[in-house]
Length: 319
Image (tube, rainbow, N blue to C red; front, side):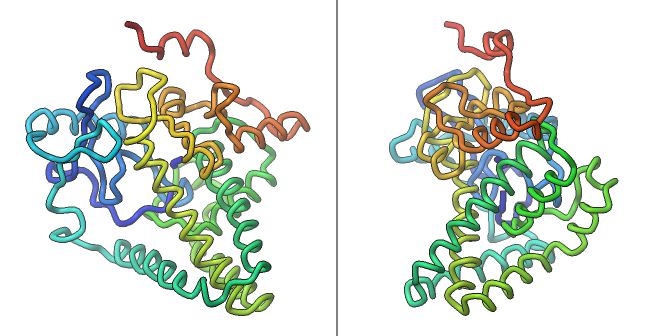
C-alpha cells in the first residue's frame, strides 16, 4: 500500500539496516529505510516510485547483505535477522522537506496527547468515519490500487473524489508527481495546495465540534492511519507467511490486513502488483477489493485486473 506517510528517507546507503531470514533460503535479503521498511509505494500525488527502482534497490541490498550480515539480532517471533546501521536519523543530512515532514508527524503525535482529555463518542465516530474515508477510499483504493498500479478504471469525477479523500490523510513525501498525473490540472492543483486541504478540514472540524473534534478527527485519526500504513511496509516484511515466490521478504499478514483494508496481504501484492485484489483466497478479507467489486457491479469500475491462473503457476513455489 503502499503504499504511505513515511518519515524522512535518505534512500539506500550501505549503512542502512539490513535484514534476512535465518531459515528459508527462498526469502531474499533487503534494505530497510529510516522507517524500518523494505520498500514503499509512495503517495502518487507527491512522489514517484517505479518497480525498476525497487528491484534495483533490493538487488543492491542483497549484494551488501552478503558481505555485511555478520552479527545482528533476530526479531521477536520471526525468522528475520536485523543488522542495524548507524546513519538512519542521526548523522545524515536533513533538507527542508525532511524537517517539514518530521514537524507534521511530530505535531500530530503531540496532538494525540489530548485524546483522553477530550474523548466523547461523537468525536470518536468522526475519527472512525474519516479513517474509513481517507484510509480505505483515499489511500488503499485511490492512491495505491487506482493511481499507482492502475488496477482498475473509474470515471474521472469519481477518481478525483477518491484522490481528494487521500489528500486528507496528510501523507508526506517527496514533492514529485507521477508523470501521467502531472498532465491533469486537478492533480497539479492538489500538489500546489496540498497542505491547505487538511488545514481546511481541521478548521471545519473545530467549527463543528470544538477541540475534541479537532483532536480526534485530525490528530488521532491521522496518527492511526500513519502507523497502519507503516505496518504494511514493516510488519509485512517480518511476520506472516509467503504464498508466492517473490524473491523478497514480503509476507501475508492477516492482522495487518484487517487494520489496513486488505493491504496486509502484502506477499500477494508483491507477486501481482497490477492486481486490484490483494486477498486472493476466499478467507483473505480484503475490504478494498469488496469496494472495487461493488463499483464493478454497478458499472463504475472497468478493466479490473486480477492475476491469471498461468501467472499464479509461474509465481508459485516449486519444490
